[in-house]
Image (cartoon, rainbow, N blue to C red):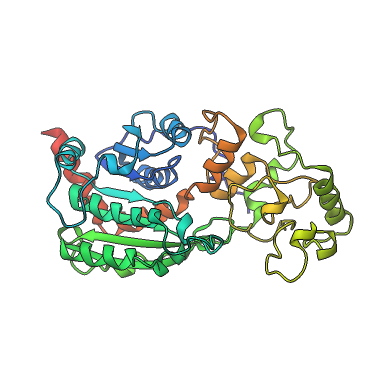
Amino acid sequence: MATNTPHPLRVRKRPDFEQGGGRLRVVDLFAGCGGLTLGAAQAAHERGVALDVPLAVDFEQAPIDVFSANFPKAHAQRAAVETFFDGDVGAPLTVVETQTAETVGELDLLIGGPPCQGHSNLNNHTRRDDPKNRLYLRMARAAEVLRPRVLVVENVPAVVHDRQQVVEVAREHLTSIGYTVATAVVELVRLGIPQTRRRHIMLAVRADALPQGESVDTILQLGEGAVHDLRWAIQDLENVPPEHWFDKPSRANSENQARIDWLHDNGQFNLPNARRPVCHQGKHSYVSMYGRLSWDQPAQTMTSGFGSMGQGRYVHPSQRRTLTPHEAARIQGFPDYFRFDSTVTRTQLSVIIGNAVPPALSRVLASRLFDAGVLDEGARVTERQVAV
């Protein structure tokens, strides 16, 4: 049946997220290029609510440049999160934190995805005991300082195995300061994201913001949407000429190009061991590396290595190449109106796209918070304050 509804990833005109009746005030820490902010903005826009970002922070300049290009009215800063939240969890507010709270003002939604490399199962040297893991607690401290209606912390599922027990420490502290907390591992493919990514989510709602009869655990029960395959996400880009850097794949060396050709010539999706580099032969569980994607399946998790067949299953289903940045951004769930052209190098672009949080995660969650009345009241209160 034909439909006039545009494909959500092919929309080229950016919605005016900053216009609407009432405001959703969002602070994004460890913001990257703004995937979580984009999802919250989409959910608010669907309800006629304007986006207001009094603070967004990331340590790297390139992703903050992308964030600013897409949210030009946001107060985006290149800085360490500790620059704004430098006190210990449970300690009195520092001078810096008092100033941060006064500058930000009343806040609806605090979101963030702290660095998670220390939790990676591929990080054998510092696994579970990386100092970066403790950045997770900066989110709890920021909630203590800013007192948002809602806190959302996104991370890898393995964060629960951290030796510092950062998830449990954060949960206990947030509960002690008046938040109701729930956690869950979310299959993002169930949110309409065409990749098999799993994320750990902590959702904390301030007690006075949770309407009677609503449950934080129920709100966090995500995953009822349609499952999309790779064809849905990128088939229209199959034969786009590589005239623009965004649509240009990485150039494979001669050995990898021969491997790509073998996969296509033989109708195969997994490369035999004998055709892998010697160091990748033998017994292993990394079947997807050097693999080819299938049109009728979701992609594997996108990483910054999407341009290399040696980094995962990133060979295009029908073309003798790996994925382009445009295709990887689509698989992450970024619509075509989201601009990545402020990045400087191809490496920076790959890292920004690979590290991004798919916006559908925060869009679906924010939508559920609106439906439950948790964020609706925040938007109405802000609107009345502006009117006064």
